[in-house]
Amino acid sequence: MSDQHDPAHIMRGGARRLLLGAALLAVAASASAAGERPTAQILSRPYIVEWVYRVKWGYADQFFELFKKYQLKILDREKQLGDVLSYTIYRPGLHTSEDERWDYTVVIVYKNILAPAEESVIEHQLFPDRETLRRDEDERWRLVEAHWDLPIRIIDPHAPQD
Image (cartoon, rainbow, N blue to C red; front, side, top):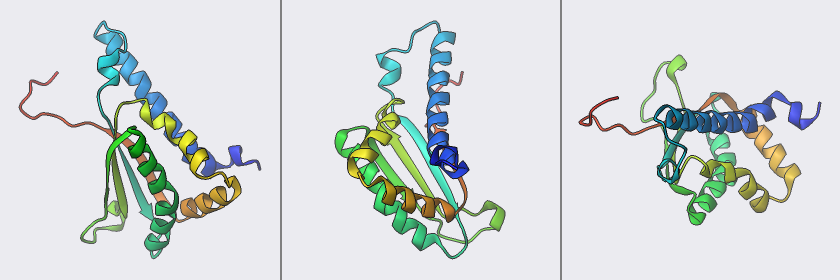
């Protein structure tokens, strides 16, 4: 089976592209509903995404070493370029039930909704050895039991709600 048809490959790249596409559609729809075109105002708003990972029991350290090897280098480069304003990695402080368990959460603040689209370009620049990258990323994803990318937004509890 070619890599592009591999379900793990589709989940990795496909999920992020699907997420970005859905976010762009949401921006366009909200702009259209408000009677405006996607403008510099919309594109100037920070875009916040939460990546959540539940890793197979006993493999959290191995997962995180691979995560640091690639994902953190990409995030750091995106930050240097100004596409990422900040990111924070969280690890739970206490145990919870298995159905609620997560091992790592990464909250990324992009400069705007278009910034995540640059990730694949940066990945190619930083990691020209595509075979090693693919092998290591396949291993990282093999260690993951559950994962989701979730756009999130900050709300002002004192502002009037729509």
